[in-house]
Image 1 (cartoon, helix red, strand yellow):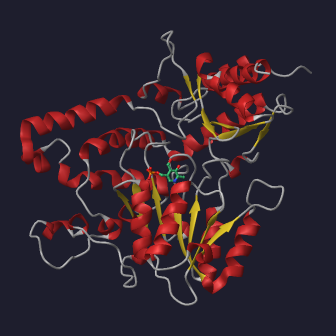
Image 2 (tube, helix red, strand yellow; image 1 turned 120 degrees about the vertical axis):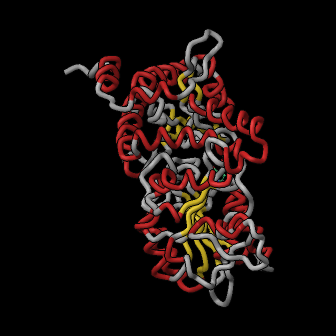
Image 3 (cartoon, rainbow, N blue to C red; image 1 turned 90 degrees about the horizontal axis):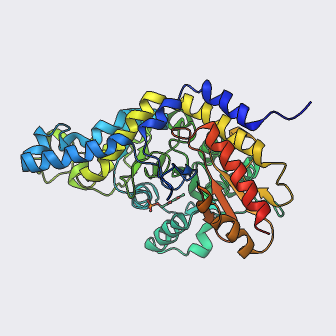
Length: 427
Ligand SMILES: Cc1ncc(COP(=O)(O)O)c(C=O)c1O
């Protein structure tokens, strides 16, 4: 029997895609010929929701019309802006609305969470992370340890994959947590690894952390809006994310944080305080005592940046309408389809760094090209002129992610053809 024709396969899948219409809610960047590019870079910067312009302009209009009165009289009163995002963010996190807050940016939020949750003592003071962690996460831990007068070389534990492996195994993560036992104060772990696209079993990591009494803090930069999360159910202590990737909040968009409800009255926590984390009804009385707002809201320091939050409001509406379950189901289909079109035919030229099993990855596939770095780089550089937006990680990795909100199966089919041609012709 001959292999199915990818063009027909893609057409069939697009015809029954119940999320297909959401593509029109986003602006697709165009190439020099005026045609939409195939955008596989939602893991880096998501696309602009078409309503973002309207909402941002609306805020500017209200500012011009109302000045300071906009805090209460704008169409979306600025005083309650962060609160407007809570319900939709909670849906994406698997959390209660009071457990999430939109604020600051990711690295800032990681620092704030660690300021509140990390209390090194004896013997409990070590921090565990993965050896390939995003640079900023390492910097956060290194500087937090130094801030407490501790030596990162002694107290920061970096877990590496087994020799010859490039992915971490869940049983090795659990075993390391158990071995560190009561020396472990905190674990900083990604939901989805930025470089390999590996999606971790966070329920098991959370359970392992609880067994030894360590705090689990998650970096959800590549997970939120990408994979299904159940932060409350898994009893994760805290988490932070940025909103410019799968959440389409725009460049430098406001980030977010989660703090589990069980920490509401935890008197051991030492969150850094600011007036915006004060209970809203008496905030403007400027009391000298800080009365914490409910839940994650108490972690806010300042009033939110309305203009960098407005696009997120537009995007979260689309997430709410689409539903994360449906998005994830389509995402699995898209990424599996992409993999099936690229591999095994390109096996001799590249390796898929991302796990093959869909439950162990999100939308992203990371392709490691064989051969010299410059050759791999030429392959990557030939993609954009052929109409595909991907990204590059040194020394030889191309990352591609068909975000289900705005990517069609035919996009994936064409991208696979273009990538295959780029690999075969750039030799
Ligand atoms: C996994 C991960 N952590 C942290 C960051 C840092 O984010 P920010 O610049 O918003 O602090 C990024 C940015 O891309 C990231 O991908």
